[in-house]
Image (cartoon, rainbow, N blue to C red):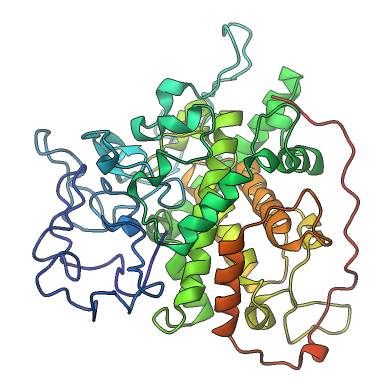
Length: 487
C-alpha cells in the first residue's frame, strides 16, 4: 500500500513482471526503477517520493508493489504462471495483496521461489473472468449458491477453521509465537522508513494489543467486549451457523447486484488503496510527503495487528463454505477475520483525520433536523458507536467503508470481517493517540507522533481553532461489560 505518484498501477512498461516470483524491477524498461535513466527520481535521495530521503517504495526492492516476489503489477500481458507452466492470459489489471498492503514476507528473506500471482495468493488463483449471468431456466442454477458447508457440522472432527497448512508459505511466521523483534517481517522493509520504526515501537508494546494472550490484552478485551461481531464463532453451533448463513446470503446478493459493476475498481483497490485517498483528498504526494508517510504508518501498524488477530481467530474464507461465490481472484492465503483491507483503510482514515485541517475538510459533518454543518470536525471514539455500514457523515470514513465493502463484493470477506476491521482500527487509533490522560493502556509510538506532527505542518489550518466544530460531547462511552465470546 506504499504508494506515490510515480508508481501508478497502469504503467504500460512493467515488462519485467512475467514471472510470479520475480519483481521485475531490474528490467531496463521499468521506468524509474533500476533503469540507467532513473527517470523521475531526481536525485540519489529519491526526494520526489513519499517521504524525505525515502523512495516511498518501502524497501530496497521496491516493495510498494506489495512484496519482492509480487509480480505482474497491473500489466495486461502478465501471464500469472511460472515460465515452466502453461501461460494463461488474464483479464485487465492484476490485483495485488489480499492483505491490504505489504507486510514484510518476502522472497529476499530466503523463502525461495513461491509461485503466486500477487501477495499471499497462489498463481492458480489469478484473475479469471466469470460471466455474471443469473438467468433461470437452463436446468442448472447460475451458480451453486445453495451448496454450503456448515463449519460446525457434528461429523467434522472439530469445527472447520483455517489450518497452518492453508497459509501462504511466506506468511507462516504469523502463526508462530509473536516475535517482538519482527525478525521475519523486517526482512524486506526499509529500516530507515519512519513508518517501519513506528511499527517496531508498536510491536514493543505487544502486551497491550496482542490477541489470544492470557489474560487478554487491553486491545483484545476492548475488541471482544465492545461489539457483537463474534456470533459466527459462538458457543452455540446452531446460532453460529444461522449467523454465517445470513452473511453468506448477503454476499450472494452483492455478487448478483454489484460485482460486475465494481470489478475494475476492486482490482486496483486489491493492492493500492492509497491512490483512492489521494484522489478523494486532491493533494499532490510530492508536496505532502509526510502525509504519505502517515498513510504508510497506518499500513505498517495495521498489518501487524490484523495478521495477529487473523491468526488467533482462523476464520475460513466465505468461498470455502459457499463455493458458488467464485471470487474473480484469490482469496489470499490467510484467514478472513478481521478484514485486512478494512483494518488498514479505516486506520488510514482515522490517522489522516487526526490532522486538523484534513478533519475540517473530510471529518464528521454534523446533521440536525434543520441544518447541516458546512465544516467537518475531528473524530472521537464515540463516532464508532455507529454500526458498520451506516453513514458516519465523513468523506474519508466513507472511502474506508467503500474499500472494505469491495472485499465483500468480491466474495472474499464476510460483512462481520469488515465491521471487525473498522472497530479494530478505531481502537488502535484510540490507544495510540487519544488515551487522555495517558493511562497504562496507552501505546506510545513516538515515530507515529513525529510523522503526525510533520503531516500537520503540511496542512495549515483553515479555521480559527476557536471556531472549529466540536463533537456534542467529548465524554467517552462506558466500555461494554458483557461477557466476551471466546474462541
